[in-house]
Image (cartoon, rainbow, N blue to C red; front, side, top):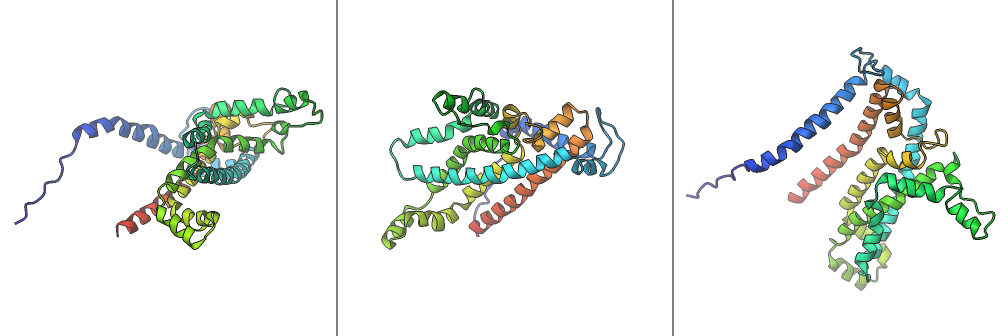
Length: 297
């Protein structure tokens, strides 16, 4: 008779070590989420107030012009910033995947902007795009008298300045994720494509990209979440201005929470943003779970 294999005893030391993290997640995250959801259904203003008003705060939220402007700005920012980050990150990953010389140097250069804080990134680009002391001033000092780089003070163009700063900072992260996927592609695929005379660009687009779809999805989800919660770069770069031209939902929430004494309205806005994040994460989780189960089958 075969001996029954005993299960591994639980690692109590590991459980004890993970206990503070579990408590922090339950108390510091889940509790605040539940609290915010509850407050969003009350008439709370400066202080929490247990007066149930149903969906009144949500009606006020979507009737608020500032909120609608911030959502529109977020859509513009999200579509352009994520698209550019994914494209540039993929091109940089392909470039490094060619076994170039000084690969580590280029990888560090591409990834370095992501190591900078969002506040520093905003301040650097604010200085560069400042009409009085940035690129415009430097170009005019070199003799280009008609040079104009004043997007950051233009209501129609200020969001593009923030998008440029975001793409500059985040493309390196996409590059690192996709490069890890590219390095996992079987070298036999490249040998077969050379024998068949398939152009390199077509191999990347038609064969390699579908093979690294997990890495692409991961990069896309991370960039989407970063876009939804963008705040530091906007606040340090433009402060939401000029006017409301660069207002974003995260700034709307924090301003109403700490400056305008509208806790209920800010909580309703945060719940809407949470629902947006969950709408991205939940399908991603089930797709990856289905893929993992298919791989084990």
